[in-house]
Picture 1: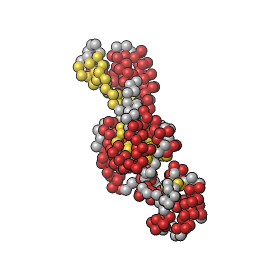
Picture 2: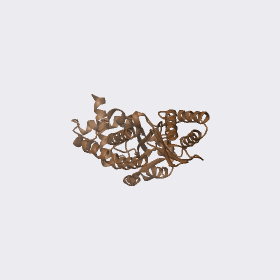
Picture 3: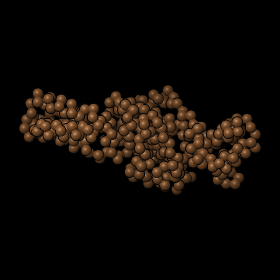
Picture 4: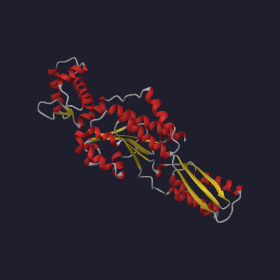
Length: 336
């Protein structure tokens, strides 16, 4: 009973501190949360939680605020992820469903996530190496010139011109299209590239030219470290912790490699990862929390999306928003 009551006190303190941005006192807790015990009992519980490292007291006469350890316990044992309302689900669906290509999907996702959470949203572009080939299209632009279109499971589309040097008949182009798709479709990038190299060696001429261009497109990793960032203006809400929490984040927004390290590896789609304060990989972000999940078609996590912000955040609401947006983006890529 005593442990349950102390956990209830901790939950109430986290919720109030996130809401009010002020240290929380015992009297306020009793009045707002109906704990059915006296303020003296709550003060004893708060003192015990402070001794165990879950709370800290900024000033002698002030109330308590959660520590990173307190937030961790809150997330692990006390948080119930808020279900998205029907209106929120419809808003997410209508906002994302209009996206026509991968760039727009990413751009809309980062805007939506920052609006839902009022934090800085980060969406990593799907990495090429984890993708599979969905389809290859060959379009005749002229008798001796083709447009090779490589469509990946991540939603990424690569286009390359192929100069054949001599005209190709429609029937030969159809056969070439079939051969290329038989070699590459459904394969991960590395295996598709190997199959196309084999095709080039076995069939000189147009097949070799097309296969070589496609292999070159598959080895283009320019977008593998790209991220989209939105909601930087939300950091203005944390002026009281500018030097410790906001300044490092503002600097990191310019360094995508730092952001990618902060976001971490893509977790399984549907699994939300929360790293609080010093749990993260970068020391100067010890006042920052990161909430992430993986996204991709068929529950295959191709990349990461999530939010970064000061440790004082609405964890249940943020976790729900991150999970919901990832699910919708995954569905769009699945249906693309």
